[in-house]
Image (spheres, one colour):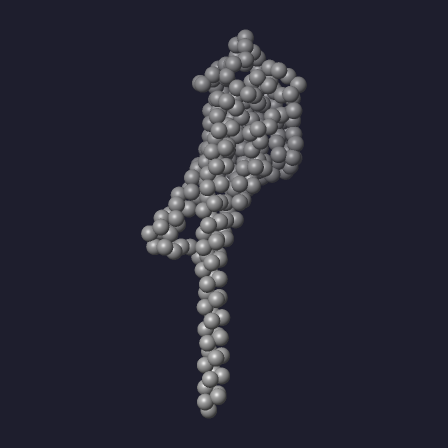
Length: 257
């Protein structure tokens, strides 16, 4: 029995600089990913969005890899989210709840398992982030319900909106849940494996759930912004009214004098 381990090690990894420092056998690369053969039947997969996945490596080997990668990490995460997947070698391709069955240790098959495991961990992280944002949003809506006004300043609201939009952009840029590596379209077995992995990890439903949650947060924040804009508009109207009254009174006093 082999193991795939996927770790969220940082918010981002500079894969271009990491490539220059790693001397393993490079099997695949693009602007966002590096897939290496570490040794015989051992693989390392590095993703720009802060994920590192390994196959059949010892704890010491994993530690050494993380040490090498750390200088290229942005916002290194000490308490890492992780996921473990068992891989069994038998005479078939099958995705079960507790293990993945492959006919042999094939680099492309292993790569697919590592890719989907990594995206599963990333979805877990984004789910936690969006849940925290939704909880914070709900606190403001509760205050609005009870007090009839907002308890958040304009600048803080703008930062909140910016944070939400940045998270949405990161998810869209980094997670290609509905896409597959080009090699999948050329091999029926790989396509079957990829579909089975996405279903087992429940990637598509989790991805949609996170996007639905972000849409709810955005809808609330847009309402907050409208309320705040109305409040500012009302303030401006009162200032204008007061200035006009002052001008009228001033003219009246001058005439009397």
